Length: 110
Image (cartoon, rainbow, N blue to C red; front, side, top):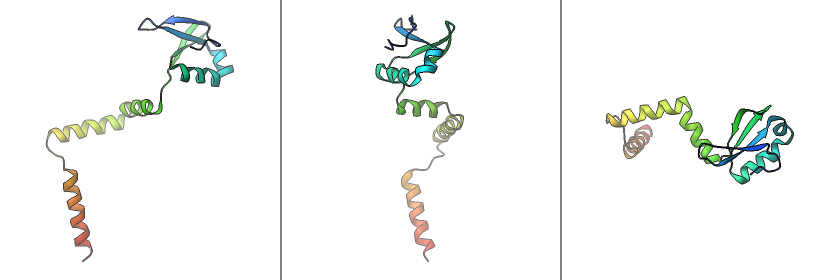
């Protein structure tokens, strides 16, 4: 846990204790606090004058990429469109695309 910087602990949704860090302490020691979060893999509740204002979560790069892609409107719309095309049988196999490209190479050389 973030023992050096913690103002206190509050229960999270699972009943586990979660660190609380004051916003001034975060401003003074952001790098150390984030290093501790990364090592402990525990979230922290950021407070201003004792009131919650933010929630910080440690995550790895794969989790972050998955989160961003799943919540990016263009990606979500593209996946929905692809799913609909697949369900309607409007897709082309990779083998067919390769065959078409290969056939195009031979006709363009003439």
